[in-house]
Length: 237
Image 1 (cartoon, helix red, strand yellow):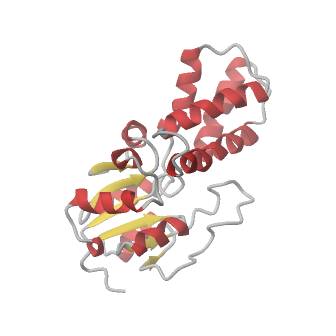
Image 2: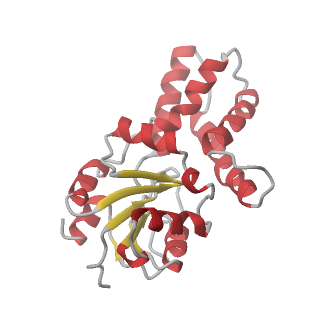
């Protein structure tokens, strides 16, 4: 499809640009060794992740007032520490560990791919993570964003229309001038429904070595490629 009108790229971040699972397991493992803990950190992180969608859905259904993702994860962390028999942590230690989501590393292609794309396009996040998280993560991982847009800007989580439409409005562009980039088909389907262009590539180990979902394109996306460097090549940068 013709994507010559595209001027800005908006990115899903968790899983698409950064390796959340691998990053958190690595930090948790190092912390566990330092504290002498025997914990299945892979299971711990997978359990922790379950709070993400469930917490956002409660907000979207109006069951609870606006709650950012840091606070959603913080409540779940308390449950997990008790469930996995981890005790003795101070509130400061819990808060620091909860912010591990701010310290995620990019996939190997992330920085070089984004750097190439930045030579031609405006690069913006469009993530459900909260604003401070995305700012800190960009700094930590060296991600060269031009601007940070998150659900917190709009008090609506993707896939609510307000998130996509709000990003388009803030960028001052027409929907067809903005391309949503994601490793998650549902995200692209909603973006496309609002007139955005779309680009997909898989992250086949985002959820671990046994991942069975999001391994291939499930829609007629404008660009389907292998990773961020592949996207840069497809867009001529």
